[in-house]
Length: 422
Image (cartoon, rainbow, N blue to C red):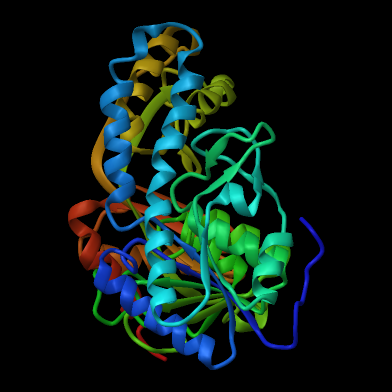
């Protein structure tokens, strides 16, 4: 990462707009009007855009229609297919940045649309999930010095061979943070269809509150545990380079939520938010205690989560009961793998239950005693909500419950733990 630059005394903001924010010509025009007002107020701005809403899914669908019939081409085909898929899906952002630049130019502003390769966002060669290695700042610096607003395609870069790469789902957030870090921006602002980061998904309980601020640590946990407002990689990147992140709405004014390196912003020892991850499966496996490590290796390679892994005492057969949470998409593969490894691992009965959700309470340095766990069990148990699996760490308590109990469970926890109070 190059040394942070400050090009002038005026503030520099990197502003990322997601697919819903640029999902139609009307919305692009509305964003352009907002950017124009900021420019006339003296702000220097770099824009990062996602593809228009639905476009990336459409392109992935086109790719899958071809790739599913190309498996018979033989060994070595996969690399070529991944390369071409990145070439295809990266075009979505090219449409949105060109339209935005045109909308800004029509308002008398100087703007230029730029692909990741033109900015020279350098990545590794992991097609479909590349990592940013460095960002060249010369072109962006020159454009800003000339009064030009760079409009950069998110989600993409180039590898050392000049190949187009994409950063994976949510990669535009990471693009924005990387540019902000390289350019020494005052803030990286992520514009979405919500007013900021809430204590939980407002669709689950109307009492969800917008948070004014939070630390990188809590935001990262919320994001990786199911909160959709920011991609976890972008939060990790922002923490690494100390880039202040602000989550704002594209559609209504407001201060949003500021995410920064400030533990003081967190209410230490209390739950700050509830994250939800849907489409989970509970697996119960009988296995000799001596083979626990092998069983873990078998399942964790298939998406199992170590923090939702527990074991019960040995029964008379000498087997121990292991319980684990798994993404529903991996269930069939996991069952096949367990069947193949059954004799080698000495497995007994294997059971599973689908249509579950993981609900995670996230805070800064939660109390180390079991009081919170007892409180959670009492809150849910009073309404007959069965907790199938529970785990805790320094900042997280996670539970697995039936999907049918999600709204009631989150509403109860949110209210009883005081998250609906300012």
